Image 1 (tube, rainbow, N blue to C red):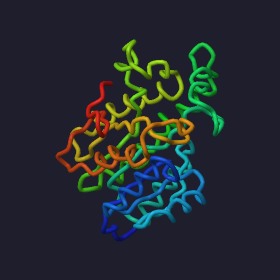
Image 2: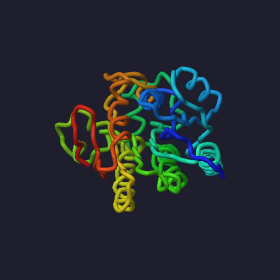
Image 3: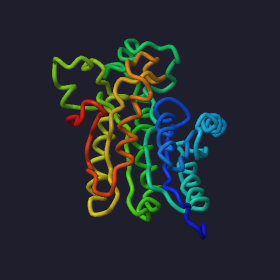
Image 4: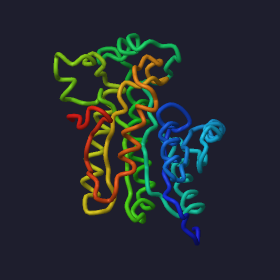
Length: 256
């Protein structure tokens, strides 16, 4: 265990070697935090860190690997002695997704009548169980912070209210893999917030919006800067900030 505590606030972002996660890392580092860029592949994490002009460090973290998560938590305590912000960003839309797969094709293959149960399990393993596993491992460090924030990067596709509305434009994309996993992540967010309601740790879910990333074959309409904005805002909430919410940068509160 380290005998000293790092002087700056420390943020850990999972799945941060590309896309929204990398932009969140850049923005939090620009705000003066020491940022830990979580990546399954450490080499890719280091490449991502080279694009951040601030205090950023690569950390090997596979959210589906218990040993990887435990090693990351142990390393953070030994090297920095603190963790103030956790952003659960790592996510996949389907197992073995082709880089050039159009969203329409993905949606057809993901319908409940024909989706592979192995595919559903793989997506939930990362998007739901991975987030919970990281939460459990990092919570002891977060509890020691003067005040802390947990941000679960969800999606408007996970809103049951929106997807139950026949007029909702993205209703057809509510499928058992990615969309339903984000509904489950929202439920995890509420559960975490209830558990920590008497502490100085805030837990919230955010939607990046329809952002151009490899998750949607870059068919999104918003930039990664726009997609990262709400996660960064919520990550920097003070100890009097809200908890147990689900929000988007321009829409505001999203219904569950």
